[in-house]
Length: 273
Image 1 (cartoon, rainbow, N blue to C red):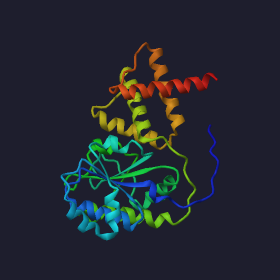
Image 2: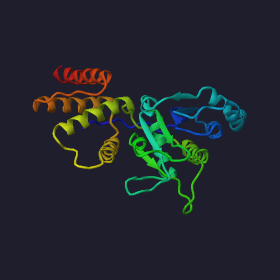
Image 3: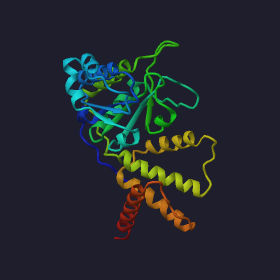
């Protein structure tokens, strides 16, 4: 068992937290989210596949305090690329269907977010104003939160950003024992692809809804707080299992295939030395 040394309590690093707006429709909400980021000390705002941006509307809602957040805002075409550098991803949802497992309110999760932020980059996803986050988008998330409201009520996306960041800001002032640096989303996505291919090779995906079933696998693994080294060990195990079964591992992306090979070989070399 790997023993991790206990660190001294330190304050959260809000600069390691990013608000990610997925498929945002209205420039006014983007500006309001930028203002919320500035008000609560979270300097990073990311947009994924936004509707055409109207700069004046964004700036008007951002006000003077939020303009610097807009100026350094990053825009990506797809969620997978946007999340690659992050170590932990939190989703938000207002829909509580039986297949949408919501584990926390913001107040319940913020202490853990602050502990992670000391050594890790954290993304908090907020969905489209009309539909929220899809099941596929939620599958990227290590944890999911919902903001309690009265029945049949819902919050505007910028309001949800305000509530979530307020809770984080409140908790951030209290020193925390830092969590270790976890594997990045890019490393985890490669590992998940390898695990999925391995399970497919042995005919073990026992569910009609593959996305839902594998999301549960991801959430289980995310609770283990895997480091980069541990991810490489799992990748090496899967590759060795497939080799023993006489099956070849082929990923959809040549880049992912190269990364997987490099990481597995590195693990093997360490084990040999």
